[in-house]
Length: 372
Image (cartoon, rainbow, N blue to C red; front, side, top):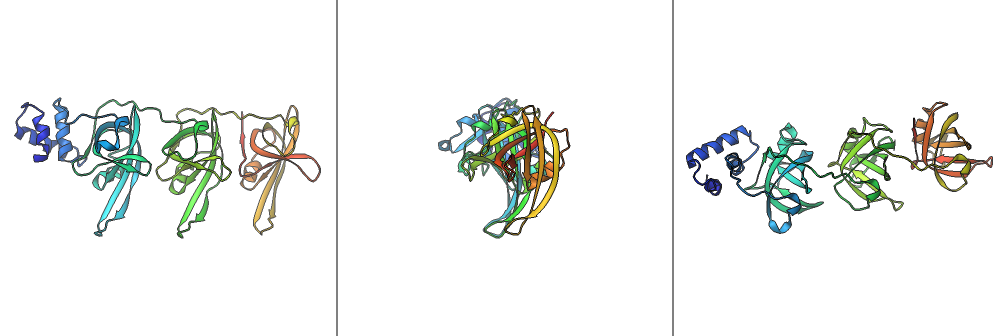
């Protein structure tokens, strides 16, 4: 118990050291491996009204402090992954995100502690006390629980600062980004081969809130979290990151550390639309109207020998009527429409067709959804 003597001394003789040691052993057994001896001693001291060490706020964690003890709520828990150490033994590592009212930080768990994520003994929403050392991670400061550190559940009431960002405020190069929005459109997952020969999968969607919209790319295993959601539904995307898109805009990426879940409340989104009668060639538009005709799907072969599909849909508003040509995957969504449906089509390009009529072209950047 030499590692816990300093904690016992803070009790000021409330109980004997023998009684204290017994309580520590009982606490470790009750926690089922959730904490080490020193952490159990801190918890016993806490139960007796004496803190083992003063907790700090997450915003006050800095690299020069080297070690930190803080209390926060788990806002993200990511499954452990296995790895091989240099001596050939197997190890496990997992990450959790812990937040209080001042900020959020990543906590790295090793081996037995990492297993607690897999078993569900540690999960999102739990309040915990963490003691560990501070280091610079790939996405900022993080806390690792090593020798002398520990983790235990706490009954403190924690109010977490809302970390949701507005889409209009996102810029390239941000990490740990969380937004909520309504799905405007989504594309079917696509498989690809990486440079190292491994295979991967990605799925894309357009997400909008009351400030704007953004393209989102979801990678590999996270796609299964996206599968239940369709255009028109509101979701939350947590712990993503942004990067510059090939056309100079900003994209949101959701990788292995991200979370996709249903939003508690519907997100409001409204596109700025143009009347059909005001459309001129060589401009991009959002249009809203009623389906008044469907040409059906036509299949063709591209110049490079690949199969293609298109579907023409006529929509009308009080100012006129226009044909919208949906290409590729959007042809499937267009084929599912019915005459009388009210729809909004976004990011479509106006052009003059061979009949010298203005029509709209909807490609991979476009979206279509029904509206009330």
